[in-house]
Image 1 (cartoon, rainbow, N blue to C red):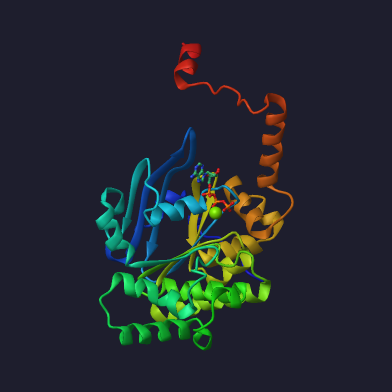
Image 2 (tube, rainbow, N blue to C red):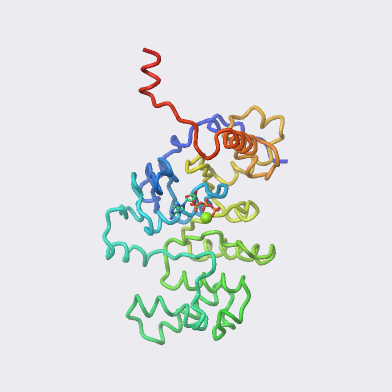
Length: 315
Ligand SMILES: Nc1ncnc2c1ncn2[C@@H]1O[C@H](COP(=O)(O)OP(=O)(O)OP(=O)(O)O)[C@@H](O)[C@H]1O
Ligand SMILES: [Mg+2]
């Protein structure tokens, strides 16, 4: 049985996580706030991703995982705070600057995002043709290497419609690897795959990290997958960063006996419920009380008292 974490650090707030040396951090988010219309989707979010690690970003639906990823790849800009990649604040870069940073990372989209009219070979070659001056023969060798890495070399001349969902994901990964990226971003890599294929994708993510030392950021709410691939894990809740810890810390929290976990702060009990998929706990209690509020007030939120109103009342 896993022993419960007893270190005093378990109680500390996430902001006090020790800062890694500047050279070790390839992605640095500081106090990032993102709003859509009137809705604050991310609030004062900070996160460091270190060179070579696999960071899993998890959280419930709508907690802001994909938004965080889109900020990291520069497809969204924050309303406040900064996003640094390789020590460069990408929020202040123009399109040209952003494009040169983009060549240093690969993205695996949910669908694999392959071009259906091209073979796998052509799909993987495309970024090399577009972004490099390499000769056709060199590109062909690169394509073979990337397809071999994901186990698809024999299928190079097939079209996306001729392969399975899992193979499409792997082909998408080969294409994301085309330019030898230093960072790979994945959004829900195993969504829509059967458990075995999904486990294969997890193994591939681990293997790539070991073989080519790439830094990975993986957004997922599938816990089996998260615990297989993560070095560290970041838990988002309603647009706030609840906790960034090692996989082992999360494992210990997940496996802790209920009586012992009952003494933990609410945020940790909430994370524990999420990790275990328990039907009861702080997450569901919160949802049902929110539902009650909505039933009472409809969609109009009760007016929040501003501090100045409070001050007037007290005074
Ligand atoms: N372009 C947009 N315009 C308006 N609202 C948006 C936009 N993108 C995201 N949101 C809102 O931001 C919140 C967070 O969305 P996000 O897609 O980041 O969640 P998520 O954690 O990835 O969820 P899921 O697990 O369902 O993919 C949601 O309430 C969503 O409706
Ligand atoms: Mg998402």
